Length: 335
Ligand SMILES: CC(C)(COP(=O)(O)OP(=O)(O)OC[C@H]1O[C@@H](n2cnc3c(N)ncnc32)[C@H](O)[C@@H]1OP(=O)(O)O)[C@@H](O)C(=O)NCCC(=O)NCCS
Image 1 (cartoon, protein in one colour):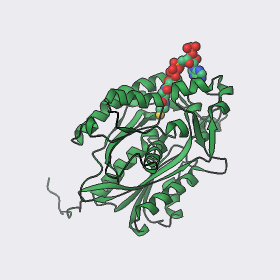
Image 2 (cartoon, protein in one colour; image 1 turned 45 degrees about the horizontal axis):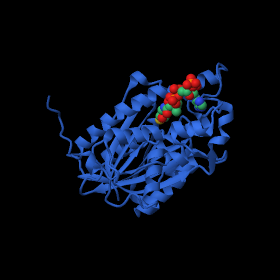
Image 3 (spheres, protein in one colour; image 1 turned 60 degrees about the vertical axis):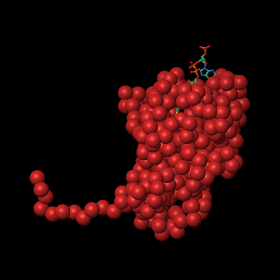
Image 4 (cartoon, protein in one colour; image 1 turned 180 degrees about the vertical axis):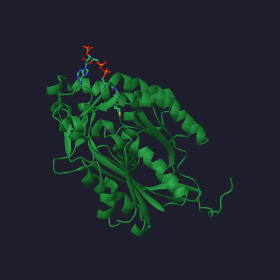
């Protein structure tokens, strides 16, 4: 049916690019020894099974908001954008302690841009790549000029020190990126989705309502570790191949590989399954930072850039996966 009125065509932009990154890790360096007693574990077991030597966690007085602000300010400053050209803030987090309003709106005010598009997304460890996918779409459709994407977590707030399934993996931090327009696409098509049949493979131990009603303790994270491991390795490698195909690239084109820093064994297994060459730079930030969920990909990328291992123009493949089980990834050409 023809409509009574015709709407004008929307402006579009050919592509988008990441302009700069920012990072904030928790101020406390927590070695395995500090966590092993309540879970009857050992430094050796944690190193062998996860590759984690330390994780960074934030002191009580430092919130997910503070980590986000630090990372955001660095990304904005390094990008060189004028603040009044920032049109959107997307924060991926599962640990902002208010269900509403969003952390993104709080940051919008604190960054001096209270009028921007601002919202949080809940996609756990896939969240930063979900955010980049959304930023790319907002920019290409002309809805925003520059977008601030943040992955931020204070997971230590939802850790039970006696939980053997996950407590030793988790750290605190925030990573940020400014995404802006580009004449040539420097962010490839996002491959994303979820597997709702496994929605409770990584989960909270209870709901806030149960906690309110005295029916359970403060909800913390727990997981079926083996199921996650198997799912992450098989499913992720397949999706990464699909992503490369959609970007008209092959494994040989990858310079830098930044999978979610879930676990060093998963990182190694993915590299093996993809058949990455010796010269590919592989992010291994988990060894010192731990698994920081949505923050892990931008933190790992920031480190590689700082260390000079990832360089301007490099082809970077990032892929996040976790609770949901949600996943997302893209190919980026580095700024
Ligand atoms: C969590 C994980 C490290 C556990 O390792 P695993 O090899 O699967 O461990 P299992 O549960 O099979 O247990 C193997 C043994 O280790 C023991 N074990 C389990 N957790 C332990 C812990 N925290 N410390 C010490 N021993 C532990 C078990 O009791 C078992 O002992 P047994 O052989 O004497 O019976 C592993 O499953 C994993 O890395 N999963 C992926 C999780 C992940 O990355 N999640 C984040 C996604 S975002």
